[in-house]
Image 1 (cartoon, rainbow, N blue to C red):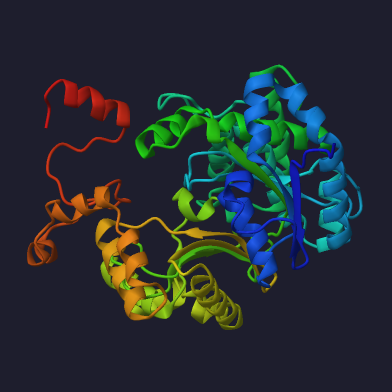
Image 2: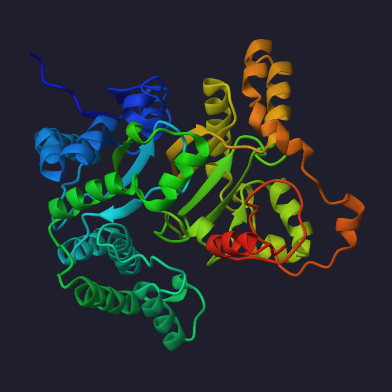
Length: 458
């Protein structure tokens, strides 16, 4: 009897999986495999199947690890061979990311760990190899914070609780008299790592793990745990996603958007997810990593010149200021932009649907970290389906099936009068949680909204 396969490799334009294997590899793992097969630049890695998540939840950590330990060890060796680096090495260390990926898209619901494999030896090796100590220590402090939050349970559980890592960062910036993390020098980041580790010891009673393999197994199991976190459970209930599906885990070689002015990270859509307009849009940040684009700490820049000019008009930013302070990727890195534009065109044609992508630019080279069919509003859903039909990308039957009956209700929601909006005084801006327009008291926390609704407040 053949051994069950729970770990699937990808990298160097080869893959053991494909886009049709979402039930087993999750959406992320299946698409990472597929992108490799069609020649998109993707960092090598491997995916642990959703079946292990189910086994983990039913039979526990030790049972799950025993089934995949040998295969994960071999999979890391596969990544080492492609990258020419060694996991846990002092001079040429391989760092990896650990990400979740269920078969149904669940944006932002589960957890991610970046820069795994970093420790006191690795940071020196990376600093020496890159010639950029600031980048090395920035990656280290990010790793300790992410691992502390996701794996060691230090993420604040209530809105009253303060993140111990953010307190340390704020104090360090105040001491330096700066406003952005990117303005802190390597010496401050080094001190920050020491303070982060002290915070871990104080809150958990244990030293921060230095062994890369201990770090890796901790992160993999934490991703499985995140399948059962509160926000993921509520999201599944809302979207009718069964608990028993579980999540896959994808482990990839790290590529870095925080190596300096020739590196960046970003998100992009092949069409406008709000309106359905056939326009490539997205945001990016130079010298950034992971969640920086959506964290709200720095103002993201637009990918295209057209998108950048539209943003500037809405933000009351002059063309001179826009071009100097907030240039588009098309302007700041034209060659990388050409590669990204061609890649997004290829992906949309291949998947025959609007794509939501995550990318990293490391020292002027583009890497794709994810693609998936993008979430969209009801209005965008109808427009994209009709446009793709006219473009002969999909059939009439497919266009009809792309229109979800539940989402048509969004088209009936009240909206602000366009002329009235131009006269309105803007007091604050944010990301919309639902379509349409509303009036009433502003609520900043979901539990407050629920409480106020039960009390009859409007």
